[in-house]
Image (cartoon, rainbow, N blue to C red):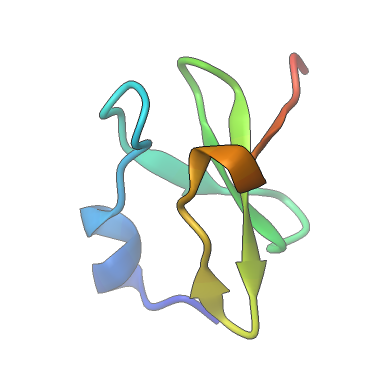
Length: 56
């Protein structure tokens, strides 16, 4: 699980907008560009080429 302090520091590398934890807790979503960055072994993977774009 990602700590609240770390979550407050993380931002989308594309838009520089703060990311939010997805409902299932498996990713971090940018509300601006809709990219979802995966969380692997409790480590956020903030690489643009690893992100999926979700429009919902």
